[in-house]
Length: 211
Image 1: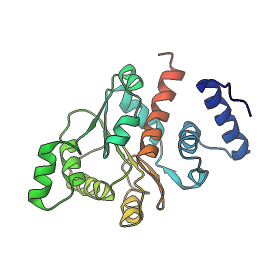
Image 2: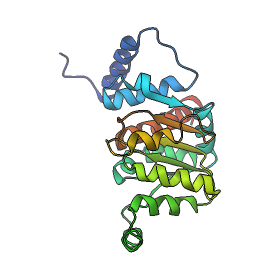
Image 3: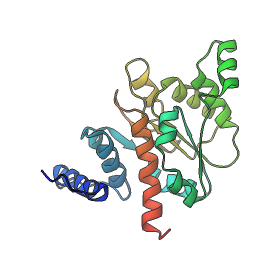
Image 4: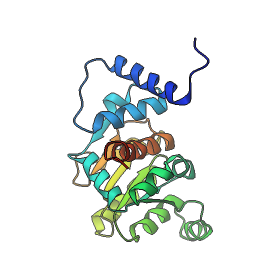
């Protein structure tokens, strides 16, 4: 046991261990970095199997970030976990509407969740929007409705809510659909996973393109 490792050395060794345990498993370009970042965050190798990417999802997400996308999260925890320096470097930003007082008031008045109102607010944002949903299946369900209504056109949907009620069904609304997506099938996920996926996209840009 080496107690004198720096944070950078710990991260480097962690990714070496992940690569060793993944063995010869191969992934399409860009997807391996996302999978490994999520495993690094969760220590759960199931994500090597349950993460589903629509065609060109990684490249579409990176292009949106470089075009100044707003990353909308469904929890302040996910918002806090997204690397703000990397976002700024890309010219992108992050928002979370969940804790805003007017969102809470409207949700109470309408008898819906704050996640529903938050998705409606996010759909009205200008420019490309990446939705990073790690907690609320109702956010995914309402977002899917908004897309069908023509009121939202996400650059990318990161759908990784965790839990037991409506979670699996909400995720499956997107799998195989036309909206660019990265989905964690099944019950697993969480705000940390949502932030990890966003960061994996950001790091591919900032580390590979010389920012």
